[in-house]
Amino acid sequence: MHSYTVTSEIAGYDRKRRALRILFEAGFFAAFQIMFQVIWPDGAKLGHLWYLWYLGFGAIGGLIFALMFETVLAKLTFPYTLVVSDDGIITIHPIYERSVRKDELKGVAELNGNALPVDSEYQNTGHSEHGSGAVS
Image (cartoon, rainbow, N blue to C red; front, side):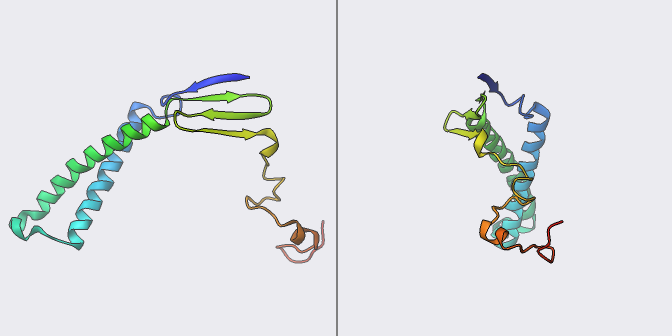
């Protein structure tokens, strides 16, 4: 049985990617805020420059939202412990624990190329999705 500690850097959440995710989330929030104001405008009080106010508000709010979201996501997700043994893999997060046993894993070949469970009754009748029930 081997135990590994997975940090955000090991999982691919380095500083460059985190900065890109923060920028993407801030842009998404700002676009959502602007779209929200276009659908339900309340900029009559600000005159013709209301869109500049909401653009600035959306950008600053989006940056604050993205920083908070990334901080909370990183705290909830990382670090966690990965325990690998002969009969399964267990991940121990600060909040929950998940495990997968060797007997529970099935490959694509075992599922007949379909990720959904195959009905054994349908499979035993000789029907095929591709025409006749002949097996080659």
